[in-house]
Image 1 (cartoon, helix red, strand yellow):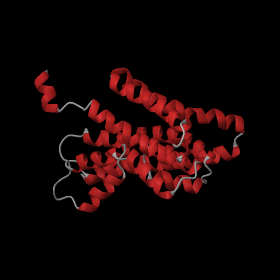
Image 2 (cartoon, rainbow, N blue to C red):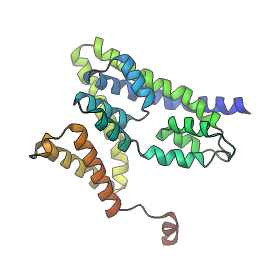
Image 3 (cartoon, rainbow, N blue to C red):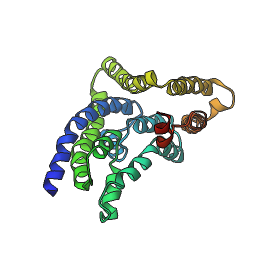
Length: 239
């Protein structure tokens, strides 16, 4: 049974890993422009399993911000994984040791959380380990190969490939924005304020990492107050 859980995790992690490889390759192209070496990119991706978080990391390195700003920005951008880890740990057997909960929490991503939480009954950590063992290495290797490609390919091709990263982010935000007006407003407001912060007096002198932290916290708090998510019980009563 244990071997079956692990193998099922590997099987479900293969398509996710292939997708991660493509995204990570584009992130590697961008990381090369920030000055990261293939080894640094490999380690950074292994420790940071989020495209937005890794993009923020490379941007912060490029802007030469402090370690504290990098840590805070990465923490804020990846904060959703705290909630995912807590939710997933509730599906483990109550006798599951803390070390397994910790390791599974370390490897959480949006997609891996999705395939795990969708399973019926109690979840075995071995299933998560199987999925991680495929997806996370492909994510890390993809970044390293992207950095290598950025070093050997002609500049014109590297410039063209770097556009894929922005296309990926557009592909992520457009579908939910079409279904949610509040989210659309938040995205447009983020664009406008990000530009404003880069040209307005005083704030334009702040580092890129500090501006990102301020805008992320301010916009998310304002959105949560103005348009909170409906409670499940309340939503059910309204229906």
